[in-house]
Structures are given as structure tokens and as C-alpha cells.
Image 1 (spheres, rainbow, N blue to C red):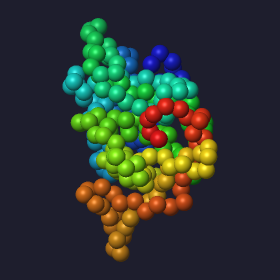
Image 2 (cartoon, rainbow, N blue to C red; image 1 turned 135 degrees about the vertical axis):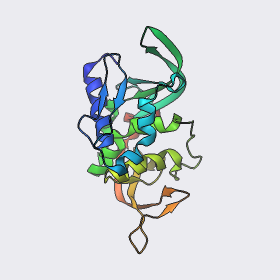
Image 3 (cartoon, one colour; image 1 turned 30 degrees about the vertical axis):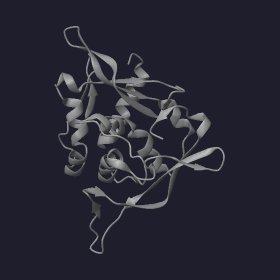
Image 4 (cartoon, rainbow, N blue to C red; image 1 turned 60 degrees about the vertical axis):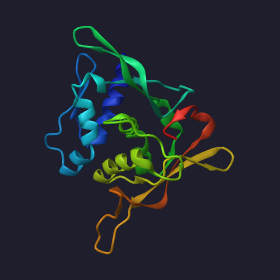
Length: 222
């Protein structure tokens, strides 16, 4: 990223994901780093995969993050293996990195519950990393189900006190709009979070994020 505004916005969203003000930084070579000192144990546990991905020195696990605005091919964010190169210190270059594209301009079309919207737009980066680290995870065939990527990101949202995503894909609302349902963790009579196969079970609520389909083109998070 050469645009300082884009870097600043990526940092803001990354720090939001950790619930911190400056624990995520970008060095002079453009590499992200995370310092989890002082973060709550629930946040540290939920973000462990993301922290490991960001701080990893494994050259086979590199990510190239590209910010693209109003890209008709990207809906909020997408990722692709081998889609970009990464310049390493010492002018070495790796071409088999995972490319993550983030379209910040799509956010202006999103409306709905304030906290659900915050969770939806600010955790796109965490969502895309979850597809590829530590191994590739596919989307669910039935978009009404959450799938392992959403389940993983829901752990972060739960740790931050945010609404949880109740399904993977956006659903059609009328002729022009699509929405994603959000909710809250199911709890048993003792107040404990209910899990199935290790993942938080979600009660749908009336919390929605909605956008005009024709205004957010491409594939990605919807």
C-alpha cells in the first residue's frame, strides 16, 4: 500500500479487531506486527490465529494486503492463493503469497444495526486471513450456515462484545437490497455459551446489515 490514508485505515481496523489503540503497527517495510501485551485473555485467545499469521516469519505463509476502492470485482474483501508477490527485506521477492483485497469504499453503502455494521466492516481482514491460516478453509455450500471462517471470526466478536454473524451469505431483501443476519450467543440455563463442534451457537435477532446489491459489486464477504 502506497497510500497513507489506506494504511491508516487498515491499521485502525486491525486495532479495532484487537480492541486496542496501537497494538498493531506497520514497519518501514510495510509489514504488520501485533503486540498482545496487556490485552484481555479472551481477546488473545480469539485472535490467536490472526496474531500468528501476522507475526509469522514463515515465508510460505505470507499475505499481501491490497486496498482497492470502488472495485467492481470485490465485495468488501476477497482473498486468493498465489495472487500477489511480497517484497522481503534484502530485496528478495516471493510470488506465491496469498493476496487479500479490501474495498473500503463499499462501506458507505452499508446500513443497519450500528454494532453489527462495525463488526461486519472492521473484521473483513480477519475474515480473509481465516480462510488461509493456518490452512485453507472453504465457504459453506449452504450460505445460510455460518461455516468455520465465520465461526472463527465470531469468537473475536464475542470477545469484543459485538453481535455475532448468524449466517455466511447475504440474503435477498426485495428487489434491490441484500442483508446479513447478526445475533447473540446462545446460552444454557446456567448462562454458559452453547457450542456445537466447538463453535458458538448463534440466536438470530433483528440485527441486520443491509446494502444495495448493485452498489457493491464482485465477490467476497457477501
